[in-house]
Length: 214
Ligand code: ATP
Ligand code: MG
Image (cartoon, rainbow, N blue to C red):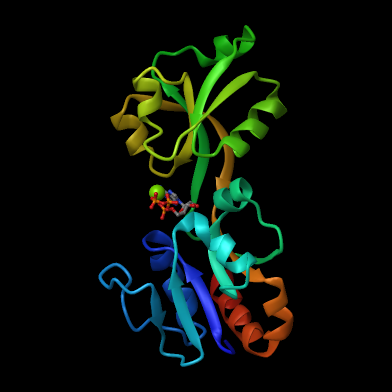
């Protein structure tokens, strides 16, 4: 494939990447939210989009099945980013990784007393590092979604999850007690493609960088 393949996930990353791609003259010819197609042509004959699960974007780019992609910092830290260039923080899909607990649980006291906390998360690697750095002992429980349920159902004392408005936490009587890190999405680039397709890729990266800086 001589052209450029870009891996994007549906939903907020797709929506927020659109204006950045438009700056490089790239506009999808179909909407992935309504189309069942997983390969979407664009207004540029040499550029196509592949629609992937958010957590799979780095994998497609690592193996060179896509030249470019967009992935959250959470995904890159949790699943690894070996062999990927991350030249641009796109400043899209912004949220915060937080520790949250049921309202009424005395987290500070539990930590002070050196209690072993049960923490449920989709982001066990990020959670492990966070608590290790603070010297807090935790048992981590891996979940794949609906983290808010874990403390309510008695599975865990706390969760580590992404928070944007906080309304999901609030609706489930949870409160955020610690900020783990700020999250945004990055442009990821296959290293070999950057060399082999430099002439095509560089203007795309430059156009995107210009919009991001505005
Ligand atoms: P799915 O929701 O299909 O299970 P996912 O959670 O991996 O998959 P998205 O919800 O589209 O996919 O999230 C994609 C990325 O957007 C995440 O990796 C994260 O960086 C960011 N993100 C997640 N939740 C929010 C949010 N509430 N507000 C802003 N950005 C978010
Ligand atoms: Mg999601």
